[in-house]
Image (cartoon, rainbow, N blue to C red; front, top):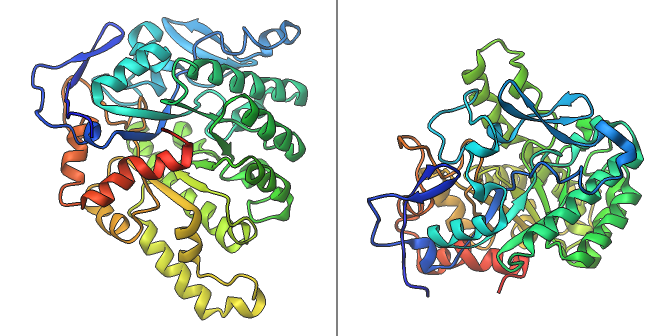
Length: 411
């Protein structure tokens, strides 16, 4: 194991700097921890530098509006780097940094990200998008199929370039044009050929008037992912999350944000149910599937219910080919990611140690890198020390390193 290090960080002018109260131990560096859900704050030129200029202002681009950097897809604002990059910021949504100069450079610069990982004792990070949406749905705003596909490919090309700073530590996950399953199949093979280590699927295609994940419509997509040997990720918030901003319940911005952002974890229950009961796991037994940023405390309870209901309904009478219980399909090929739970994770880690993955959600609003006045949030190693206290060494080795290392081919 590596020598334990701990360098707590504070944000000052674009960097997360060491604090003055270093801890003597770092569980993350000891186990060469792999962070399985982080996000890249896309630099302003991702699409304008890569997509044909004939599309003009329809190309995703950044504008400075009243002192704030805002991303636009066509003429529609789709957030900004300050709202998705809150690491080190002393505040909460709707308060946020104003733009790129106010956020850690490690959110958008690969070399700075590696330095940040070194300081925290993190071996590798898996990278997910922001602007195009957590399942690619943001690109539908473009309304032009050719441009939509060009933008997906431009992002995937950019991410491989970004991760080239150290492709064993920066793990690229390819976005997909899920509105066109044949284009998805082509992009799966292209993404695998240029260095992506995983595929990002839309976890709730029904929200965009596409068939649900249990529909045979997707079989050629699953087959392509299976053929190239890449795991498929289902990130929360990949469906309809308009309530997160619009406050249709009239609760007020902060209360509504807390309500909706906690409920979107449960979208992935439906996702897993479709994959298991829809027979995807049965038909593609070697395909690895990951529930990203959804937490894991609910997983044993759900799987117990799924087993009970499948048995009570005598599901095998109708589908005798499905010879495993839902929990057995999960154990064989599905993973879940955790980053804030403490009391709720013990059962999941005990029952499914081979299926659990640790993450930080860096640099999102509820990531493990709080602002200067620490309160509800903790830095990664401080969280690990508390949440994983009493967990066996063999389980720690799995959930912090070996499960993810095998899944993403990290040496």
